[in-house]
Image (tube, rainbow, N blue to C red):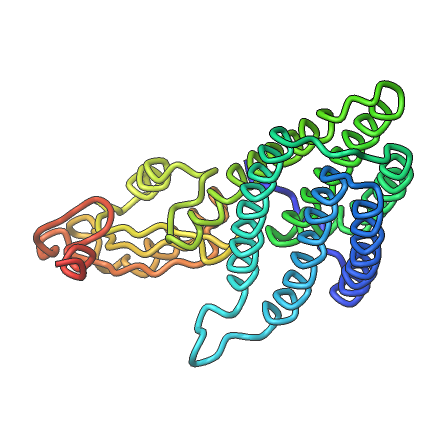
Length: 309
């Protein structure tokens, strides 16, 4: 099922992102100071995650600017895919941070350190409020951009992390149980890694020119074969130009005796896949049923394999 998008005005969206960046950078500084003063690894872990959110928002802001550039001779499809590249950078960075936090948590299990619980609770409460504000600022934009959606999900994760840190700090205050700090750190790191690995797959799929995950390639091919006047379709390439635009490149075989209707049949195919599957870009090579190309493959083509020899 495709998402329904409600684009935010670009200038208004840019201002929201800038405000979110400023708020998150300020929070990161407060959390680091609080973590150092309290000796809390969990609070510093939350600060690192929050800082990664700020960096991801900075990357997202730059990507939004670049993505608006029109197509040119260098980038004939436009610059929209820069947001996908930015999302890949953000998720990769999060994975590295998550692995580092796991390492630090294991070390803290071996050598528990004293933690000032009251500082943890106060700073984490402030963080929770800031995370909620940032999530509100980016929520609408997250519906229309894989890049902003990554930042939004990070802030939701931050909010949950802050709740976990508050609970951990409260337990330390009540029972002086120091191991709760590395335990909370493990939970934060685990959530970061789970979220990152879950979200990075679709991003890699777009960059690898994979077919849209919400559309069955076989359904598209069957639809084209069902268009009146079409005998077959082969050498099909079906991919995502960016998060919102799908493309189809294929050889379409026209039934015998209907070559004089070829242009009309091509229009039916083009309009049909746009209506049924929202495929906005189609490149169709028409073939006569009697003189079609040889060595036919349903998807891909001979040239795809020659490049890897």
